[in-house]
Image (cartoon, rainbow, N blue to C red; front, top):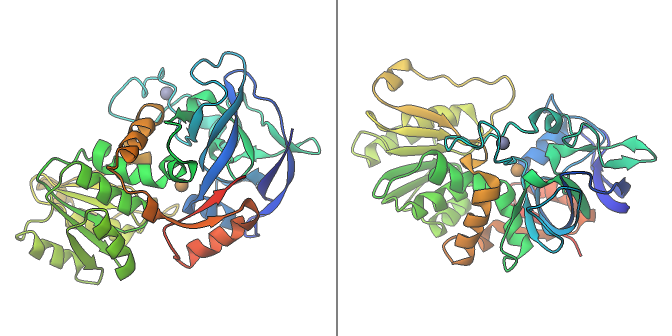
Length: 368
Ligand code: CU
Ligand code: ZN
């Protein structure tokens, strides 16, 4: 079929919205009609050419929500009409990692997905017979996408797609960092560095875990106000004394849990140093640039601090994204403030501009 999609033709150039071909889903694959898609930093990072593993031409986009249109042979968990959220982090439920509660890093399709292929090593996207690769296995800046069944979470159809798409990446990453990676305990003190989509999600996650104190650190007073709405109890404008001020606020010890959601290695260092002696756990959710390293004084570890990394918040996507969306529908997660701008697919480059200007938390593309 012919579909409209935003294609990255050349690194550093604007995406080009155009007509491309999308083939029928093969075995284990699903055709999804997209209703909404968030514009995320990872899309911009790849479009800019900064990611050395990037490729062109490709259809970007990985924060999608939509409705199943048809399914390929052997697909049993989804049927036409089901509402779904796309998962760049799949869950096959069968591999060694999927069967282990300690991780969400499914092993089933990693290599082909990293190459921009569907699991059988080919693409369904093409143009004049030339293959177009599937970015992050999702390619959701498009009216339709074909994805593996194991990379789609079936969600409550009552939840609007322009909200559920945020659970496809940033929001779940933040919520999950607090709920599933750190497993914040009730009554604890938490610090969240960064009040973008991931950091605000982490603040909400700490609140859901019944943390007593949630300190949020950011450069922007406006974003800190958003953190307060999500449950932050203390707001801190970042400066060179941030760590000293956090230690002062926590009786000289530091926090039980700290979260890093900026991707800046200097901030990661502050997050480690702000974790409490004896048991403080620092969770890194931000993605640093390729080749960057994190400096930690070993004494901080010997004296009991721990450091954990969190990819997609440790969320096992097919099982836990639907649960998070149910909690949103139950009124426990306030998603509306995150949706800052609504765009059409033709305005996708405007979404990148807004992100670079740090205007709002998320721009969401709506398809009609
Ligand atoms: Cu993302
Ligand atoms: Zn798996």
